[in-house]
Image 1: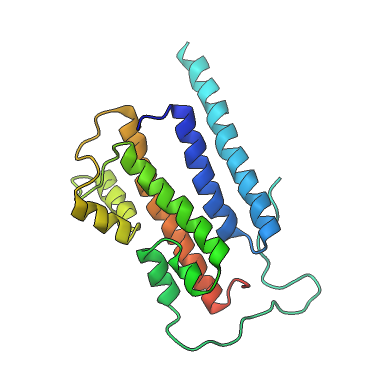
Image 2 (image 1 turned 90 degrees about the horizontal axis):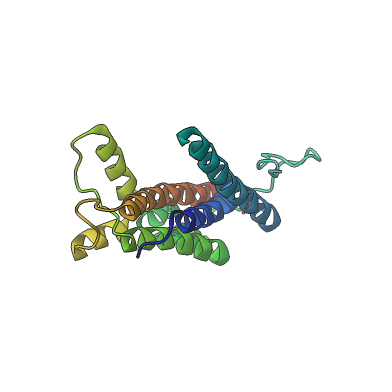
Length: 58
Length: 143
């Protein structure tokens, strides 16, 4: 199995966000919102850092 | 924006609802959660949370193996030792995988490096989940 880097980021973010959401909050609604927040931060920061590295490498 | 973290007591001033005192070994959910991802929550009858945790952690572990990730067996430097500790945090899935001989001996491609990290992080997430089950059991976190 050889997923692309971005697919790997999405899978990593999904699994980690589910665990963070469940363990860091105490009601289902807050768990869902926190999980979504973590997922957005994981993926968003990966995209931003990728662009930064791209611009530095030019 | 992030939701606020868990509170020890509600804003109204009343103390947080504590579960009834339960007999038995309080570390059982912690140990069960370490050995089998999600088992700590299953013991506390948190079926949905346990299933999601098990799916996420085991899914991450299996994805790591599928990407030809490395299962660390010993450490020659500090990074390898830390990775071995992370792998051991997976509990039974790690030992079963070692016994079955799955997982790469050496990282030979980029996705295999990702796979190794997936396996280590799955172990670290498993410990977070096991500690959460322990907190639920002791009443530190409301059920």
